[in-house]
Length: 254
Ligand code: ATP
Image 1 (spheres, rainbow, N blue to C red):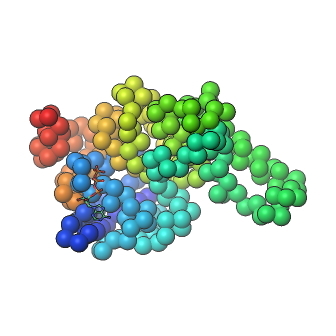
Image 2 (cartoon, rainbow, N blue to C red):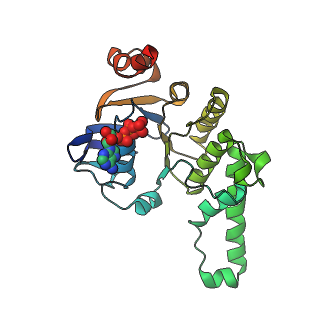
Image 3 (spheres, rainbow, N blue to C red):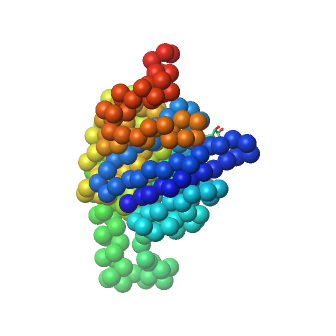
């Protein structure tokens, strides 16, 4: 679905991303990992159109998306979710997801003021779908709770639900487990796995939580100093000497 080909991005003299290539196939969960400053976020920004690469290309479903604006890339089904920033704290869980869904409604202002039966029907479909997403991520019991009252773990699940509200084919999640304890991270991991298939064609993650990454991913891409250091299944990555030295090793030394 996604082909990242030799993308490069420099900031002044810093090579944030240097000739990185990898694919995400339909049905897969792929994680991008690496130490702080390895270039993961820059890579995400290059794929989702928030940054334009100095070289290389990004293809989504064989279509070149390199340098296209983020909203156009999102409309093609390649959606990137942000930490926290998407959540409207005074709205309920359901309303937050419905708001994300409304971007896809086709209703004009006139139709909103004088709704026809077709408009009411489309509105009902959006509401049903939003409720279904809230239940799918495990927040059914919190449907009508204000987002401001949610725990950290529930907020992360709501971010995922808002991402799903944008009807992605491939969803990119930036540190979905940030700030979660291991129990919450496990719950999130279980939810993420169930999404691929029924709601998503593929999932691309950046996260520092190794137990989440290793348990949900089909493949892991490891970055270090802007370059791709390794790529493989979680088992291959765990046993890769270069990865152990550069990344996992650094953690065990601490
Ligand atoms: P982290 O895990 O800490 O989020 P990361 O792997 O996402 O790190 P990036 O944020 O992509 O890494 O940063 C890669 C390098 O590029 C770093 O050296 C960073 O300081 C630099 N960098 C990122 N964005 C900019 C920018 N807008 N201007 C200048 N330098 C930048």
